[in-house]
Length: 562
Image 1 (cartoon, rainbow, N blue to C red):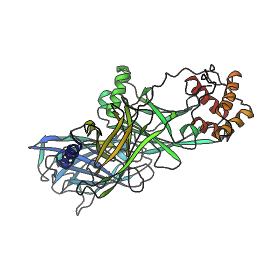
Image 2: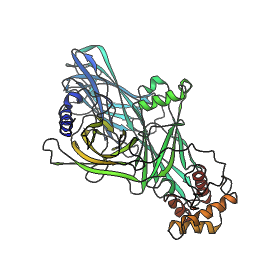
Image 3: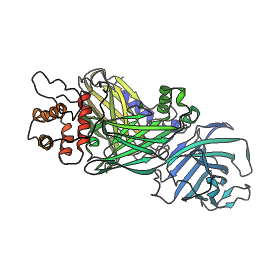
Image 4: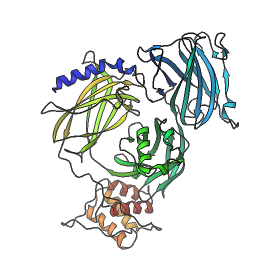
């Protein structure tokens, strides 16, 4: 297919969006839409939206839930609706009441209240509205007002289930023969503070959880990993209802093992998560890396499958984040243009980056990042892409998302990783189409653009199986070794001189690993990024034990050779 035909195809898809969007259902940032139900010749569903869309406990004292009942075939909102709304968190009922709305779009004002001491939390919840004369027991506020709910809602972070029953529609006295029930989910975040103890100072770590409280935080010196736990129900029936588990780990870039440019692996219940699930955001804060665990329902089901039926009764989720090596990034950046004029720039810039070690024949993890004009990440973006061979003008890969009823790939945090197999070395054009943001496809950032990917021959990217590492005892490293590390980090001595210090520590039993073989020319090969660790150690930012433990791990697994 020619590139011109590809562009025409993409434009046809874009202008067909209303057909697809009317059938959309799926979880978004602060919003959700349930699968439709057939009723009276219609396909009707419910959407729920939070305002603000990203709520963090303690940062807001009020919020709004908007509930809409509509026909997906026509996008027409049904009027004069009687809703039964239930709000649940972690299996606990927080609120339940009937509400009536004339235009079918119900707005509920929420005021979180802390300190409920009732065993049944719903007993602390109060409602402020009047009963509608024609809809018995249903609360209503005239003149476009909103019922007020005051209670233990959004007072804690977690996944909130907003269950909606449709009791009546079209008129206040028309009862639906069979109650229509919908489950929607929204996430509310809360921050928990932890520290990593080092010889120089305590390193602050923030975990922002969108699911439940986390606890048992640990830092392991041998591999610089962060570990924590969270209550979670692995029963397959429950997992089928969970759209997303989102945990966010924030670590200062000044802490050497988590410096900018480091890549990471993530594990949930000791199962390595798909690389696309673990997203690194170095953009939002100048001094902090944010690492997102965005574990989808499909990934939860895969983990359950790997662990087997014995995991179904497990009530615990464990998370582990392990720094790897740094790498050289190739990248391509371009702006989008609107679809009407094809020339007018939109507020959207796309950056595509990938590890330069990958090349032809590899399934390359490409990182798509979407920025607004202020270089802020564009959250909850919906996009698709097409990769075209510049020589043959043939499409080698295209992706419009996994769900034909929910057009587009969702980049919840404005960052997404897509694995693309590039068959041969050369130049490839990539077309990116942004449909919009949120479950309603808001069009501010919609547009289309193209970039050029130069793919080389690549290099081996396999990682050796980690070797067991002896437990570190108390560490005392001579001052001259630390001096060497500082001089090496500043480029005053070469790799061989620094390696002599490492060899000394091995011979003296400070680092308990076998001496690795040198290259034939007698020179040690040590990646430049290791200098960061040496520099920070020389400045007292990490302890002797931390530095020795890190070197021990690097040597034992062949990452550095001495």
